[in-house]
Image (cartoon, rainbow, N blue to C red):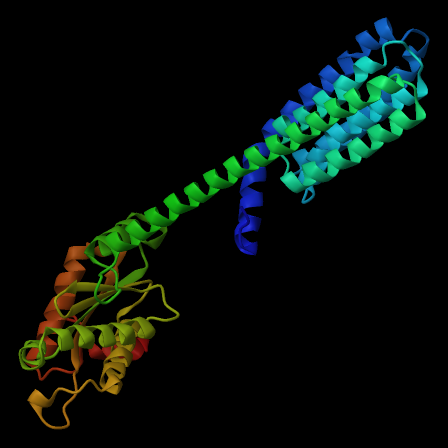
Length: 378
């Protein structure tokens, strides 16, 4: 079950994040049990006990601890390290088999098989790593059989069959574990995608792609709750498409919807580079929420969008042969600590009403704003 490159990277990172602690603890316990078998070495190997002590404590244990440290640090070679731990243990046992001549050496062959299977269950490395490591272990085992007399000639085929069976079980276990993890990853990503899609639908106007009122309420709720923003200005711009009812009645709702989409595109473009949020506030009315924006800056943004809507040149023949769709704007600004959201919307709405009453296709500030003060601040 292969993923595209980016998804594969995400899967590996998530898989390591979820498993590295369990793998580290699991193999730490496994290493302890591996060294605990030094008791069986003492009982079974007799004169060769010292050989096994050196192999277990002075070779296998330090190497495995180094590998475990890399796993704990989430090394980019995580899968290789996980695969090398059981492989190192197998090499240690096989070396002991070759250096000693104890009568109980055949028992250690089954220990190698157990280590192969445990390596897949505890570490869960990728299947290709398991296949390569198991193949190398099997080649090494054949070499051990060739240079030692652990088994009589007539028993070697049976021991090889046991080893092959262990190898097959290891690879199948690794494959099943990886397939299960990958399927869980895909299911998790699908759930996240669906949740994100539902969240977008819940917060977005389906026609224009602008934010909806719910999204606006969440944004303003967060902003008004932010204590660091209390003394900073915030602006609201309300725009209304001029004579939109006539447009709809003349050309139909499909044309009206297309007109709103084109205007929404200009509004979004006009907010580029700002922290502003464009909201379809109702019908042909669009609200712009502008954090950290004073009245002068808000009027400049509104004026730029007004001109952009004229440049869009949506024909409005019902008003004349060369008439195009325009919009009127009302702008209000205050500090967060000095007003509530509803008050700012009321002020912007009053300014919008004034723009409509005074000829449309223009930007008006909130009632009471001083043009001379604004000029000085500009």
